[in-house]
Image (cartoon, rainbow, N blue to C red; front, side):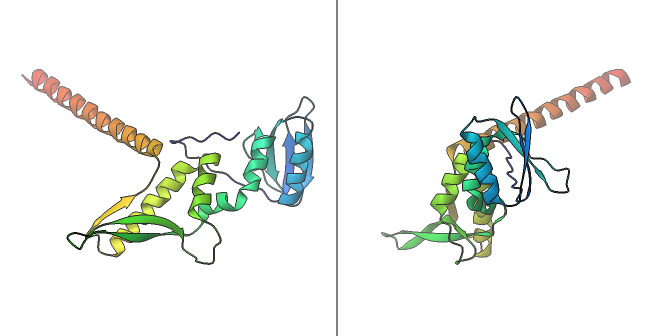
Length: 202
């Protein structure tokens, strides 16, 4: 199973035509010309065993990282959503939140959507696929970027609520903490150097 990781920068690349390398006790290589053929090869392989596999593009040196045949087949089944998460054009719709008693706009909630209304993909499918494929950190990042862009477009005069995973928030907090620590360490080392310089000057 493809395990998600909150801090990873996972990138999934599909090779539509090339060669499937099977890392079995007796390594095998099968050529394929379409994703459908690749899925058929993987399905046949899984009837025997779940060996690590990789794909090599036709007339290219590029080879994908080895993963289990079952994991690659799972990726192929969600190929449209994975491609959209990584490369699709997204936008953020701002849903107003009102204080009914005072009849004032309190904030906006950012809702991630496909920029093209004709793109048949729902936010639920995106986040479900991202969680399964280890891409939720990437999708969270894109959601934040679009929310900030949408808020800036309307003038940024109100608060904006952005929904993202707790694990991503923890990762952001941890990275921020590490940055602050490195700044403090850098500052303290500089100050100690200054003290040494002063001592040597005296």
